[in-house]
Image (cartoon, rainbow, N blue to C red; front, side, top):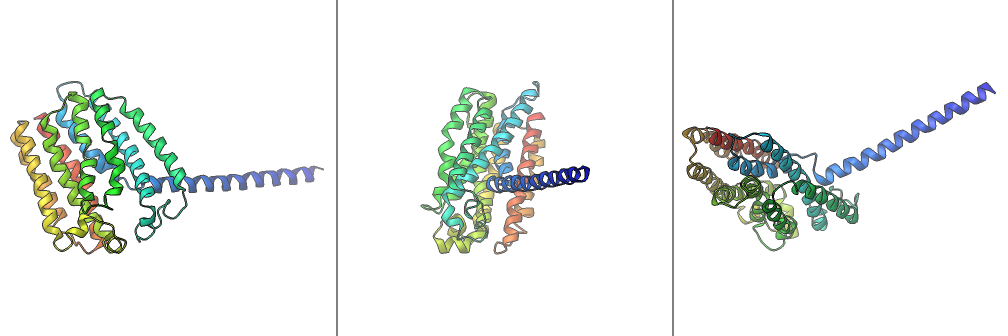
Length: 315
């Protein structure tokens, strides 16, 4: 009897362990699919959405005041960037499902490969937007209204590549809208100051996302998707150079209009070198790895611009 009891206990324990392993595997697989769906494993996307928010917040804030509000809003904008970028990725994958199946870089995305259904993707999007709304209502009414007004931009972007060669311009308008929100979250009013920076940042995105699009240019031409990568494929570096000059000019102008000290203009040399030497000089436009590296370098550029603006405000 004792032997029989021990044998039965062993079998029960074995079954429980096996069930736990299977359950853990299923959970991890679903979690990995969600991470791939929302691109949480690729932080460059939400960081490029976050930096403009932080730029706007920084130029609006009075750093002689208590910094608690600044750091609280910094956290809110970071969470908002992660949530909205994740929601945007799902919407993009739903809209581009049939295109993604034909593109080498995107054919294994969860929705394109049908590992996640469109209906589940919609549910995830709604949940992420609800969480983003909870973050948003922590701000003043003007910021809430402006943020809600920008929602159509976020969801219309995936459609632009079907109708125009300028979807990257539309992305720039959408991705850098956080500069306006960062400003109004503190000032509670609209001013031309953040629009100077916003204008330049639009061309920043137009530059780096044009390079990013070169990874898919062959597939995009076959399936009929439009982009600035295709439009300027004969002379891309001149186009990117133009965009980066506009961005650089806006950084100079915002410093002049906000009466920043000479230290700001001195340190601007660093982001300028980053753009024109570190990024452009080493770019091999026909090399996919080079294009991806170029794109990722803009995360550190966003950080450098933030530090320059912070110096301008403090000194």
